[in-house]
Image (cartoon, rainbow, N blue to C red; front, side, top):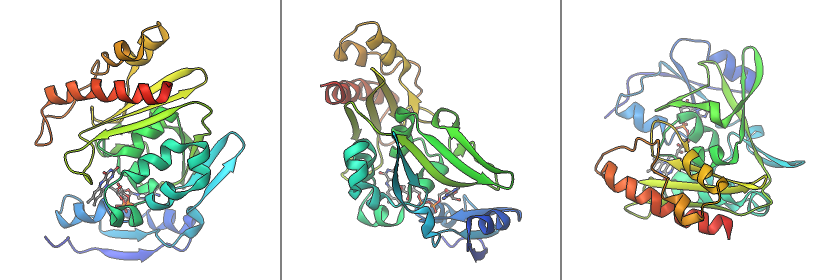
Length: 271
Ligand SMILES: Cc1cc2nc3c(=O)[nH]c(=O)nc-3n(C[C@H](O)[C@H](O)[C@H](O)COP(=O)(O)OP(=O)(O)OC[C@H]3O[C@@H](n4cnc5c(N)ncnc54)[C@H](O)[C@@H]3O)c2cc1C
């Protein structure tokens, strides 16, 4: 289908983007790989597209003490190949390499992925397990949002209509990690995904496509703290989740799958 008529402006700076977002129904355009398909289906009908794709100052990976700062416009392909991430927070590079196909990875950005708020997306789950911080810049300045508060519903986030997501901060990992994803075909979205990381002496587990937002597998984490082994803890992975029931798999199948994948992820992360 052909999108509804819209205006198009190129943002020349972050402040300019915020200013342009002040007009009714304006939307940011980054890689366009989630927004443009929605516009073609007329599910999204912005009256103005604000293109931030040329703000190259928002594309970087930088070490910042015990953290790593990632610019929101960093593309999945660049995350996957970044040596700092590979060495210090390999789970981000690893998960980015599993997104879609080469074309999607060369256009799609980490900021676009998380701002889109799709519970089937991979990076949101990884950032949830990492307890990452997301930096938003809007008309009242900058604010930092913990990943746990960022995802608020299906395609909904804590970003306001005039906010630009500028940076994502992840911790450098000293312990093991894993992201496993089951998909029907090699380049598909996750039917179920599981991120596991060891941090501050405990395991954190987060799940993809198990509800309206990326979910922490609290029952699994508690079982591990209580002394359960990885297999017994993984058996709790379906607790408190509400998986979709669709053509990729029934909710029941997904409940089975999440236990299996959690067992695998814990085996890798805790080995
Ligand atoms: C065929 C295909 C397969 C895919 N497979 C996967 C997959 O396996 N796993 C996966 O996780 N994803 C997958 N994706 C999604 C892909 O990762 C997208 O690129 C990503 O979700 C959106 O990034 P983008 O830069 O293209 O954002 P856009 O499409 O440009 O924007 C998406 C939304 O985010 C907003 N936005 C963008 N940037 C910002 C910002 N800096 N601040 C505030 N709001 C912003 C936009 O206004 C829009 O609402 C797939 C996409 C396609 C087309």
